[in-house]
Length: 317
Ligand SMILES: [Zn+2]
Image (cartoon, rainbow, N blue to C red; front, side):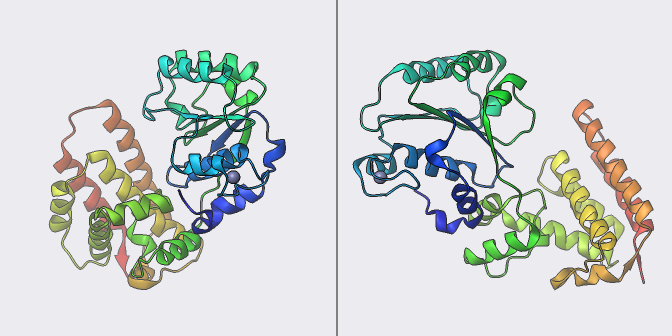
């Protein structure tokens, strides 16, 4: 079980809640990798705890059962990628049972944006007529992905994104001393970054930003950069996302007049028209839409075009 002290932003969210007056249905929203499930576990443990109303005592029978994932008054969806009607029915049945140990029961629906329409409709009834001592805690990393009535029946708890400085400090505090924020796509959140590092998959991001850094500084040729992008073992859409992210970062650093530090300091010397660069970024965004629609795009032509274009825009001073 996660210690909340390791996740200061979750702890802040938790401390802002008054668990004893929590409505029966809550929806915890926030991007992937921010720790929504960690927050839900702390809320659930507190609701079920036999000794305390504000935070779990971590000592009572209930807290012990929760830690061992054998609490009889707690249920969570098994499949987080698609939540089908059978699972919702099981959860609804659970809501009619009386509690065994704690005074209340808790239902945890993780990634509830993955409920299909039938599941959402079935759940709606339970949300509209909640059984007395049952709390439903749902998480979602997508906005507006659910039936609007579900939103209107839930108390909403939002976990905000962390800024660059907070992410830096947190990842470094996890023992990754040579962490550099710009080596990672800015759409990744702290838990995702640590997961990539743990699984050894961070190298591809580091190599990607290094290559684009060298290309932007005219240290490697257009052909070599194009070949690198084509050969990169990654879906086309991810490559486009990373490209957009890299140049968006460059653009926003220039617009906000926040100069780069670390090994990205060399980007400070680049001269380019912000309008031209934002045009290429828009073009990349359009390409992304096209990739979703057209299955066979010539990747080689596509990257040659983009890289030539970027090369003509970004100049050394
Ligand atoms: Zn307890």
